[in-house]
Amino acid sequence: MALDRRQFLKLAGIGGAVVVSGCARPSGDSYSADADEFFFVQLSDTHWGFRGAPNPEAANTLPKAIAAVNALETQPDFIVFTGDLTHTTDDPKERRRRLAQFKELVAALKVKDLRFMPGEHDGSLDRSEAFQEFFGATHYTFDHKGVHFVALDNVSDPAARIGEEQLAWLKRDLDAQPADARIVVLTHRPLFPLYPQWDWATGDGDRALELLMPRKNVTVFYGHIHQEHHFKTAHIEHHAAKSLVFPLPAPGSQPKRVPIAWDPEHPYRGLGFRQIEAEAPVEYKLTELPVAKA
Image 1 (cartoon, rainbow, N blue to C red):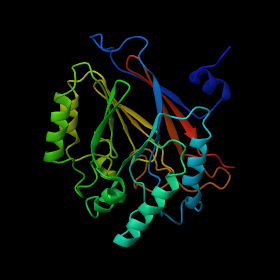
Image 2: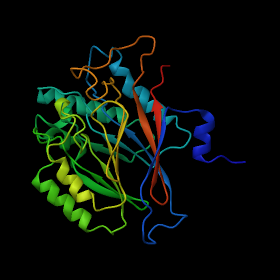
Image 3: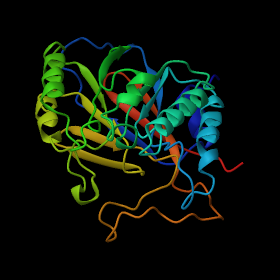
Image 4: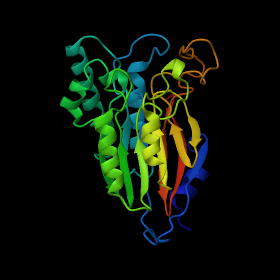
């Protein structure tokens, strides 16, 4: 008997925790039972250019992740990078050098449909000017097999705000979507105040959520906090992804936001990426995949 992708992953024992994110079934008939299903991969917080503790192998983790994605039995429809592609630097030339190196590295991915977003390490010092030179717009939309994707920029403003202009753009975009639209929001920082003391919030994220709240079928995928995390604001589910450079502690679990120490016995513990299966009518199956040691 032929195995579908879910059966293969279960039998192969790939990855860690699996989370199913379910939204309300659309009230209309826009999505039939045999609607196209697909999956994509989320990578986040690669911090290319980072050196030193707590990851003495920082130059190896992104190439290992690329190799792991290329080794997937079935290749994803597309790949999203939810920010902090590179590690911050005050030197504009070095910032562009790191962005260029990152772009060259990810060109080795088999999948060529790549979607990029800035993190504050990429864009807060120059309002993402260098990022845009290499990767284009910092906020945009695209549609894929019945799902409307919205990439929001909450990092280019040094105050960690989305801003009036972009909020107005978001409202116009949402107003143009059907009432039962299936919407996925991609962003770097959390839109809700996860732990503002550690910069784990968006200054005007509440206004974005107000615009999204009337929609029944919204799911948010983000990065920034360097760990898997799941949260709900009313019916909207928020899923944070692991980092590819070093893990951070749970929100508020210690006095300071200090990276978790490197463990030579388990050098890639806490690092990884995510596979997201989009299934009809409005369900997302999340599979957390590790960065292999070998």
